[in-house]
Structures are given as C-alpha cells and as structure tokens.
View 1: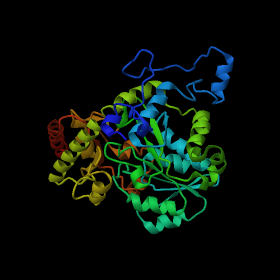
View 2: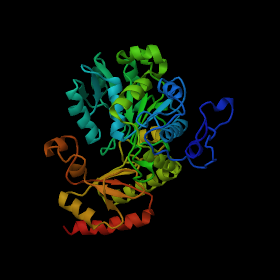
View 3: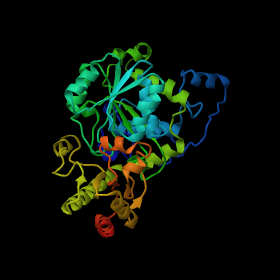
View 4: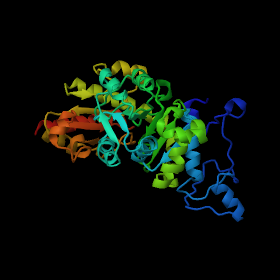
Length: 422
C-alpha cells in the first residue's frame, strides 16, 4: 500500500501486489487531472447496452443519482488512501450519517450513542429517527458499565460516536470501546471528521464504518459540501439481523450494497460531481494542511493557557486526553480548540475585535474561524440543557487554519485587550 502523501495525489491500486501500484488512467486524451462529468445522464448506441448496464450486466453509467464517473473516481481515491473495502460519497456529512443509520436500523431498533455529539447529529438521532420508531439510547460512552448495559439489549444494532467530539474535544479509548461493541455483536460507526487520514487510522482501532464530513479538510477550504461512508470490511454482516438477507446475495458487501443500491439511490444522497471534483483536488494537499493546522492549533492553545485562559485542546499536556491523543492520534490534536472568557459579553467583544480570524462556522478550513457554540451549534437548545452538556455562553470554538501562527496570535492579543475593556 502506498504511503498517504502519495495516495492522496495518485489513485492507489488495491491489487497492487499483482502489478502497478497505481490505477491507470483511461482518459482518451491523457488528461493529467480527472475531467469533471457534470451531467445527469449518459447515452448509449444501442438499447441492449443500456439495458445491460441498468441490470449490472455490463459496466457503465446511466444516471448520476445512481453513479457518476467523477464521483466514482473520487471514491476510488479515498479507498486507496484509507485502505477501506468500499467507499460511498454523499452530498454532505449529515447525509453520510443518514445513509449509515438507515442502512443498519429499522423501526423497533435502537442505536447507542452519547448526547455529546454534533448538534445536528443529535437532533437526527433524537427527533428524526424517533419518528421512524428508532430509539437513540444516549449514555456516557466512557462509563464502561453504562456501555455494557446499553449494548446488551438485543434491539441495539449500531454504536455511534465521534473520535474527537465537537466542541467538547473528548477522546474515547477506541480499542476498549470497539472491542466491547464487537463482543455484543454491534457494529461500530464513528464520525472521524476531526481526525483525518493524515494522522488517524480508523481500521487499526476497530472502527467498522467510518463517517467523514468531507466538507471540512478534504474539500481544501470550503470547496463544496460532501460526506463519505467507508466500510473497512471488518464486521461480519451475516450476524446483523437487518442485513442477513442482503448478505445471502452480496456477502461481505452487504452493508455497502444496501447503502448504495437502496438508501443512496432512493433518497438521492449521492455526492454532486462538481463537489467530488473539488474534493479530489483538496485531497492532494490534505496532509500538508492537516499538519499545519495542528501545529498552529497547539501553538495557540499553549499561548492561551500561558495567559491563564481556560483552554481545551487534547494535545496540551494538561488535557486529560493527552495520553490517548499520543496513542490514537499520533500526537496530533486536530484543528479545534475551545476556551472560555468568563462572560458572553467578553466573548462577543473578543470575536468582534478580530481582524484576521473570521467569524464563521466551519472546521478544517484554510482560514482560521471562530464561533460561539452556544449560539451557533445549539441555537434552539434551552440554556439549561446546554449547560448540562457542558456548553456555556462564554465558550468560544476556534478552528485553526494554515496562516502564519505569529499573525494569528497577534490578532488574538489585540482582541483580548478589547475583551478586557468590557
């Protein structure tokens, strides 16, 4: 398998042991960059050939809602980078979560998760899935007894968590949690958006299905919405009651078959070709940008901590997750840190005084961005519920970009002076 920096630029061949380590280009004009097939339909010279392609008796494309050459090439690039058995590109990170959940769950089932996941994910679990008769059992995943109790319920068909949750920045012991889930025959689905390929290997730690919002670091800096679902081929889908019938006809591909041939097509969740094309370009600098963002974030976190400002960043030695950060994330803390300025008024004065850092909601952008999680991520959640989740009005979330860190710290220093005058 090629090293990550190479496979992010060239599409790796999963059958490399038998020949060329790269997938050879079949572009008729020898284009060095994949063309954009930004069209909805594909024509054929004969009705018989269209019928064969439609019935999966011949290779080809019929309609972009089902498949598209640009999207297919993007999925292949991700598969080569990650080592996943199969990859599905979707319209957004949220649609990737929807795709995975509806491929595994039906009415009467339960999923186990935690209240400390991204706000829209929590809303989908607690509200939307509830409308389909699917119950989200929310626990403290770090509590082993609570996790065992939840997983022991035969109605549980999926465990979901974030490898680095937003905005709490907590890390679970992946080997322990995944091993426990597998003991109870429950597949592990994890959102790894904050822990990209540059420093995290999901399969190594027991994650069966990886979810990524490619809108973030993969896009190259707000280069269009997208999501990814990766199946590592580690879970025996014959043992999942909702996929037993699918397994009989598609074997180890049961989850991917159900997700692609049913949920993806029927709900129209496939990634837009234009966005897939943008994301292929973003992949080429992913490692460089991830490393730079992590270096900058650590420097800023250390600066804030030196000013006695309560700061949360998992690569700080003061973090309770420092050891797990070293073990699971190769010592990289990601692009996000949070800090508290004592009051909402001071927090807002600080944000409004910033010049280089922009007030906007995204993460792993090339630019450094800042928001108030209380007002932006949880705008419809009562304050009492926010506080129970550990979200406070004075908390700020900083997503650190790839600018010169000295310029960023200088911007923060001026803004802190403005906040001190409130």
